[in-house]
Length: 193
Image (cartoon, rainbow, N blue to C red; front, side, top):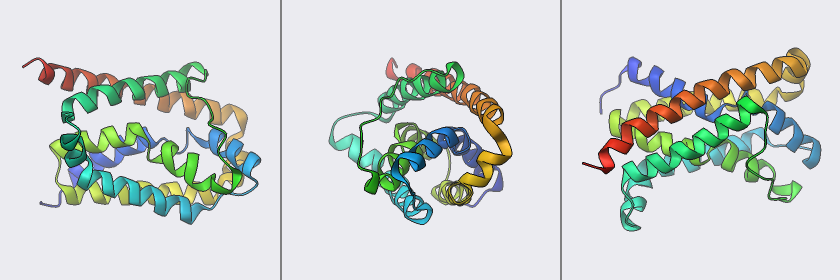
């Protein structure tokens, strides 16, 4: 468990691309429009709890239900792939579950938009390569960014405009697609060894 800035930076960038809080801005604005209000601090703290819990307990939970980390990572790569396709092609694969506006800060914002399947898969994959402390710092950095973005949604909407939001979403979609391909190719080999 050694602190390493290089690992922190890499883990931060991976999680930033997967969480894609800037790319999720159109979704966040729609949730805010429907719910009337989102609570940035509550959303951030719930996402932190989910992510840190999964970082420490995720592999144990997978073992209890008989799933290997590599299998989970391959399955997660398909989820990341689908999310990337949504972002790049502007299509909707994941449907809104019609959650209550009162819980919008928790579901769907904290989970699954911020701390969803892609984030969970990335945490399991990062855990295999990096020290816990570096991943926890990367989570903290990302959630600080999430908090700032959630607090500034109105300002960001005006600054970027519809075209800017669309461009950012597509760029992060391509980054997420590359992460999905790498996650798949790295872990699929391990399943057949």
